[in-house]
Image (cartoon, rainbow, N blue to C red; front, side, top):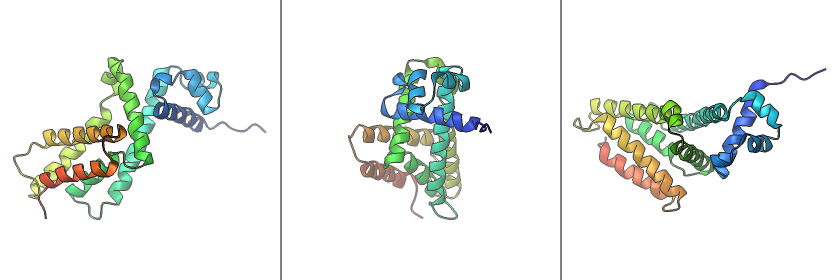
Length: 201
């Protein structure tokens, strides 16, 4: 009796092999053959499921985004009920900082994609800004809600403030990966800036 092939499981197996290579070696090392070796499958099978390397890169990037979203969801669930704008902003930004093995893996892998798109502007134009845009929109929404509740000064521009927070967390993440500071000190810096933004209840 022939076993049925779970095509989604095969795609996941191959995409996660690429993400492991991206994390440990960078995407410059992620040839289709290298991915096949890492996944423990044939090159032909990789090419069957992903006809081009770009298709594989984008599928893996979407899976990485889903992993980050799941992590954010866990941190939001732990932020208290009902969540406040500040607790939501704190949870989401804290979940991004590379303070544990999982977040460090995610941050390193996103850095590998960033390095790749620097040499392929067309890729970032088509696909590179979706996650950052969603993050900034979410932060801006929470800042507006906090302004309506009198917890953030009304003269703050929500979009500009959200962009600044996102950029700060990205910079802090790079400084942790570069061993300039620890995850704890990065978290302390984030909380310092959030204390300045949000009024004490």
